[in-house]
Image 1: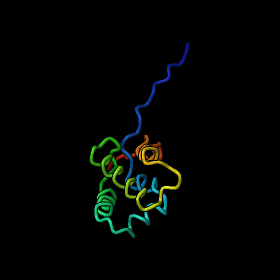
Image 2 (image 1 turned 30 degrees about the vertical axis):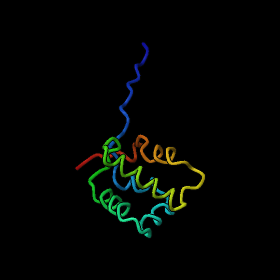
Image 3 (image 1 turned 90 degrees about the vertical axis):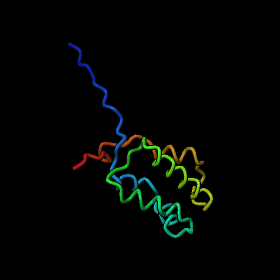
Image 4 (image 1 turned 30 degrees about the horizontal axis):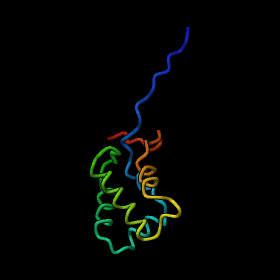
Length: 101
């Protein structure tokens, strides 16, 4: 009898801590120390959310905005905007999964 492997759906809800840890220290410092108020507000909203829904349109917009800001600030080291945005929005891992309370 062959075992049937059941594919699990991708993890698209992750903890805010997991989302924050996807940014490098240099990226976070650039956001915090920068003069772009939108970047700071987006970061604050992300950190105050109960979870990060990687499919939520406002989150996707915010991540794209932050990546553009980081490119302008010269923080993206040899990585293009599309690649970095995709990295930040990739499926979550089991350890990043938001379980809820």
